[in-house]
Length: 331
Image (cartoon, rainbow, N blue to C red; front, side, top):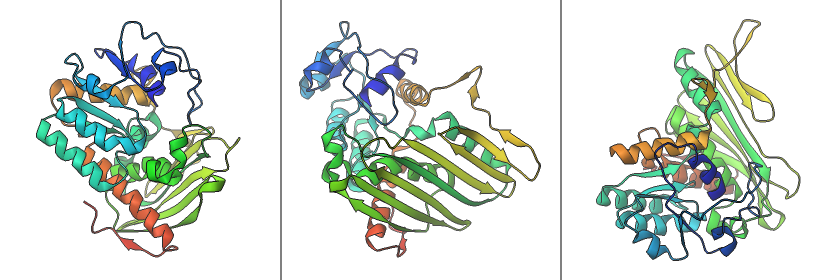
């Protein structure tokens, strides 16, 4: 994700890359060709000659020329590093999942409040054009009657920490945090959840099929890791309302509204004359919040913390073989 964020940062006016931090000498040299991820972009070489290159976190946080840090670290490091950065007076953008547990995410929020700094979790679906289009279309289509979100990929052959649930939360947690957060963004907190699925860490399988129960009905959230190998990354959604059904599939179906007429209506993805990259839009929004001192209302850290708690609740429900768990204790 560090490579993805670096590419996005080039499109953010007024933000300057001041320093990079890593314990990997190859990466510090600017050689990111060995980096991998779910999204398929090849690694590249980056010119870091004009930026500071740090191997020590304390030195990064002690640098008065750095206003904000973008944490693209393994999930188990998010809480401690974010709290240290906030205490050092830095604004913090932290990759998803915000933390491994809700309590850790709330400690991060408390640290931001004490420091008077901006904290935002990079729940990038809130900025992806395909999901922004969905959000924008909902108010004009009446009551929601049901929805379904899915996200799957092959178990990663890279990033050894990802396969350790103690460090990553596991495949379903790491992937479906996106879709659970989108449900919170669009529909609010569910009343209860249930889930079934299968987890075999040795085989690389970690699948969850969950139900979120709302007053209007249920929302399905499904996906996780498939067998390591050639299985492609994919995401999709379907939302049914009184006024029609909106569907999207990353394999080739753009967001489209289907009504009782014969005509399918593609949703507008453009921002002006271009389709805005979600990562660039996310970072631009974070930078503007830092500049203005305005809290990130579009992606508030308290909702990111609830997303962590809700994913943990779904994993607990999976262990109960589909029995419902009430969500009244979510903070």
